Image 1 (cartoon, rainbow, N blue to C red):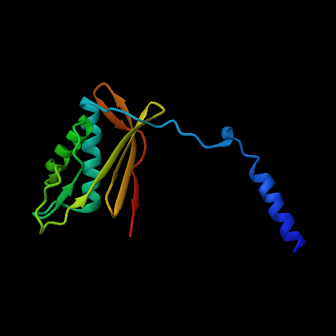
Image 2 (image 1 turned 30 degrees about the vertical axis):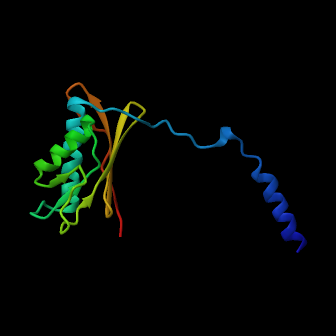
Image 3 (image 1 turned 90 degrees about the vertical axis):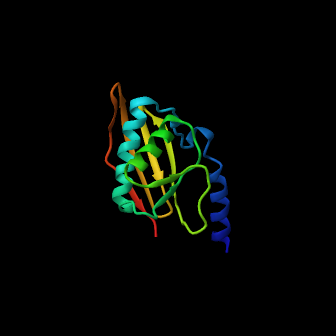
Length: 146
């Protein structure tokens, strides 16, 4: 019993040794991706999503949040180009069960990290913006959920 008490005292004292400077920090920030870079990233991510969720069918509807950013507009257009029905205003027929898609774009060390998520899969990839668009700077990260 005495050893257990000593252990808890030692653990409590040592837990106070971590300062704010020891905390993990991140340098990622939301970034506005525009023009050719937005189109290139959205096109690549849409094609990778299509590879994972299968071809668009007559009943395949993707629901996105309404957003007027260049990336959101380019992503919606790219998904429609792959044959998916995209709903961004929330109005869906009662008999349709949409695939809910969330996305994010963040800047990190001069690159752009793009992520797409559904309830069953999450995709991520880093890109390097160029004058003509963007080029992949990493391999595609795929996380499948059960």
